Image 1 (cartoon, rainbow over the protein chains, first blue to last red):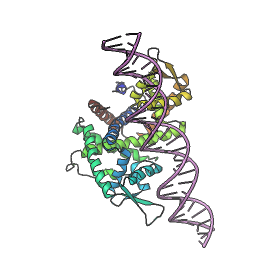
Image 2 (image 1 turned 120 degrees about the vertical axis):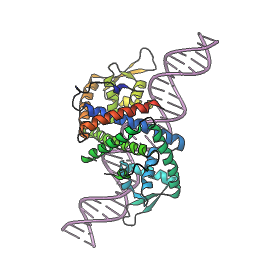
Image 3 (image 1 turned 90 degrees about the horizontal axis):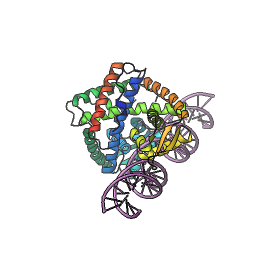
Image 4 (image 1 turned 30 degrees about the vertical axis):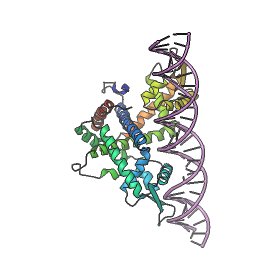
Length: 162
Length: 162
DNA sequence: CCGATATACTTTATGCTTAAAGTAATTGGA
DNA sequence: TCCAATTACTTTAAGCATAAAGTATATCGG
C-alpha cells in the first residue's frame, strides 16, 4: 500500500494549513478505499452500482416517493445525473414514476414492490460489507470518529456554498 | 441541507452494523462536500480538475518522476485512467515523458519547469480552500480526527483486497 | 536461443458526474 | 388576460472511473 503520507513527523513547525491538508488527504483516502470495495462488491455480486443503490436507499426512506429535485438534493448529485440512473432502475422495474397531480412538470418516483424486495437484499449485503471494512477498527474509536465527523459535517454546513 | 441521517437517537438498540453504517455515511458525506467545493474551485479559478491536480501533486513529490504504474498506485486509480490525464497534461506542456532506459515498455513521467510553476500556484490555492473548508472546525477536533483517521486507514490496510 | 509467461501500458466499452443549454409547465405582475 | 420570469426536468458535451481486451517488451525455463 501507499504509505507516502504517513511521514512528516513534526507537526509543530508546520506552515498554516498543513494540518488541514493532512486531515483532508486522510479523510479522502479512507473514503476512497471503502468506496472502492463497495463498488466492486456491488458489481461482482449484484451486477449493479453504488449510485443505483444510493437512489434506491433514498427512495426506501421516503414512503411516498420523491421527485427528481428532492432526489438529487438528498444524494448531493447534480440534477441531470439522476435522470439516467432513474431511467435504468425504471427499465428494471425497480422504480415507478407517477405524475405529480399538483405540478405537471414534476413526476414522483417510488420503489415498486420488486424494488423494495431487491433493495432489502442489497442493503443487507451493503451493511455487511461496511461492517467487514470496519472490523479491525476498535468500537471506541468508531464512536469517537462518528462524533467528530458529525461535528465536522455541522461545521461544513455553516458556510455552505452549494 | 439534508439532515435525514441525523436522526435515530438511540444507539443502544441498534442492530449489528448500524454504527458502522452511520460512520460510513458520515465519512462519505463529509468527503463529498469538500471534494465538491474543491472541484468547483479548480474549474472556475484555474480551468482544471482535481484528478489533474492529483497527478501533478504525486509528481511534485517525486523529484525523478514516476512511471505510469507507480502513478496509478499512488493515486488509487486504475491503470488505464492515468493514461488520458497524463496525455492532457503533456499537451499543456506541464509534463514530460522520457523512456525508461532499463525497460522500454515503461516511460518515466515528470513535471516540466512550467509544470512545477503551475503546480505551485495550484497547490497554494488548494491549501487555502481546504483551510477555508475546515475553518469552523476546532483545532482540537482537527487533531483528534486526524489521529482517528490515521488509525482507520491503518486498520483498512490490514485486510486489503485491492 | 526460443517459446511461454509475465509485466507495463494503451485502448475500448460502459457508466457516473458536472455544467450548460434546451423544453415544458407554473407563477406572478402589468 | 397575457407575457415574462421562474422552476422542474432532460439532453448534451466533456471528463473521470473501471474492467477487460489488446500491444509491446521483458523474463525465465528448457
